[in-house]
Amino acid sequence: MRRNMSTVYDVAVIGGGIGGAAAALRAAQHNLRVAWLLGDEATAKASRAKYVYTVDNMVGVHPAITQKKLAAVLSAPEHAAARKLVEEAHLHLGTQDIVDEVVERLAAQFERADILRQRVTSAARAGEEFLLATAGEEVRARHVVLSTGVMDRQPRVKVTTKGGKVIDDVNWVYPYANNETLLYCVICEGHLTREAPTVVFGASEAAAQVALMLHERYGTRVSLLTNGEPVAASGDSRRLFELYGIAVSEERVVEILDGGAKPRGASLRGFRLEGGRSVEARFALVTMGLHRVYNELAAQLGAELDERDGALETRHVLVDEATSETSVRGLFAVGDMSRRRGSAPSFKQIYTAQEFAVRAVQTVDRRVRAARRAELLAASAAPST
Ligand SMILES: Cc1cc2nc3c(=O)[nH]c(=O)nc-3n(C[C@H](O)[C@H](O)[C@H](O)COP(=O)(O)OP(=O)(O)OC[C@H]3O[C@@H](n4cnc5c(N)ncnc54)[C@H](O)[C@@H]3O)c2cc1C
Image 1 (cartoon, rainbow, N blue to C red):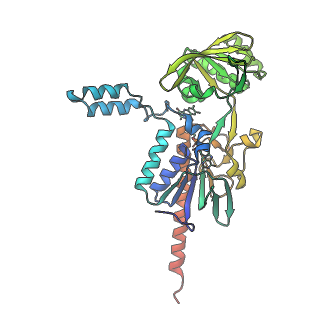
Image 2 (tube, rainbow, N blue to C red):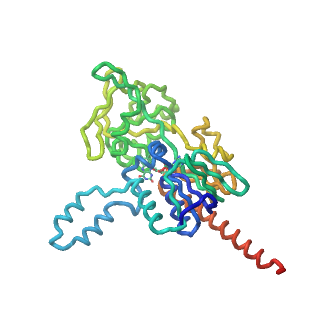
Image 3 (cartoon, rainbow, N blue to C red):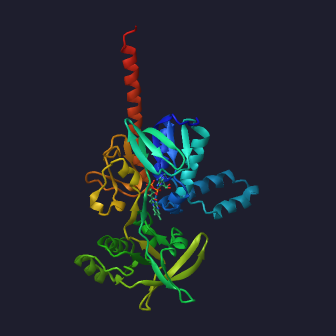
């Protein structure tokens, strides 16, 4: 169904990552009138959705499943060459694959879903409606599900070029990120570091805990690099570093020791530090906290943010434990940007984003149907004139 200026959606979903895809799909499947605002090139580039190429920890998405099914389809002797191609292909799923498939399915099959590849620049409330502004239009909706994500702080590297120019930035990260070389997600990717030399980037007690965990779980040969920041680990963590043989360095990194090209990026050998020493690393895990929680729209709508996070730009949006509704009725936040009230941990994971996106849409659906029933009953009870 094509929209016009007077369309008021049952729900607008903001964010073209996993949480947004799960919410938009469920809303469309429930036959709700849904607008899905995916964001634009710039928001995508600054999101986690863009740099997860290999989903490795979720039951059901492993490429071996597809490979096995394709091998069965191609079992006849004349398909031997095709079977070999399938065996050798990289069939791992990434976030973008998952989102793209949902976009295609919604566009093809769900008439009541509209997809806008636009960034929402501001949000306001007008009575019972939310008004969402993009660069060119305004979208009106009775409920909103936000899933605009977060961005990690990245380690800077102070490299001196052959011409003597000093480049001190984070751009070195990109060829290594998510080539199963530079890691960000200890829950989903930590297992890759088993017994391998691995650098943990970070200076906080949280980074220290990750370093200890890698050693304890996987026998990983860990070094902690604070990259110029003072170590803020507790006394107990420092003592355990000694017992486990975890080296800690506060020097800046001045060179990446490249291990040669891999199919989708680069591999690591290690890092050279300012004092001249090298640290061996097959992997590096970034645990420097968050650079941003994309909470502006939630803040504009008056939703409560978690002050324990400190600076405004890194505050998560507080949500109800069961429904993921924010402190503003009708406004939901899911995925990495949200934090559940109470003591339950809030994992930043694909399946968590999906579960709470579905819970939010279930709540929207219940309310939309309840409102229709109430209208119908009121109309049927009205005395005829
Ligand atoms: C390197 C890496 C590997 C990971 N691997 C795994 C894994 O194997 N398994 C797992 O379970 N989890 C993994 N995770 C975690 C997982 O990627 C996140 O939990 C998940 O992507 C969160 O989805 P999200 O919808 O909250 O946010 P994102 O996926 O970050 O999506 C945010 C979306 O919002 C859009 N957006 C932002 N601002 C606006 C705006 N104003 N208007 C409209 N749109 C906007 C962006 O363009 C983007 O599309 C990994 C994370 C990283 C960083």
